[in-house]
Length: 88
Image (cartoon, rainbow, N blue to C red; front, top):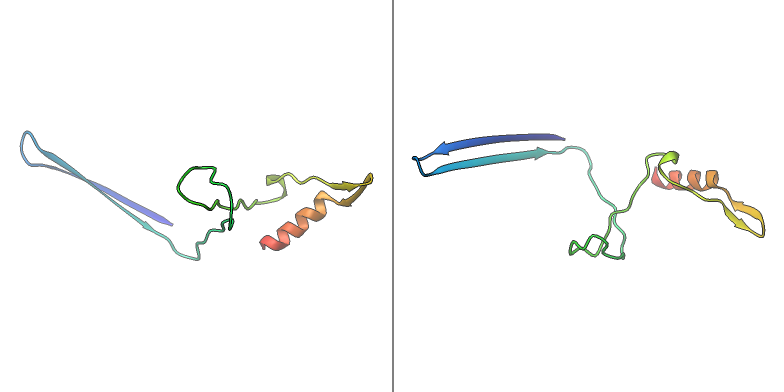
């Protein structure tokens, strides 16, 4: 991504001055966003959808072991492997 900006100040006379700002943002590659189909509007931004958070690595998310009858049935490591396979 490249961001270019420029400012121009024009003075017409003692009482008038105009300032113009130009911004240009160039993107390349494939840019996309994932959103929930239905979700609460927690940011109150007139949108009915919230962005999905995608963790970078295992340390960026907290997984808990699923325990039933004192037995671990779905470990945190296996959960991360499954989630990471879905992300990639």
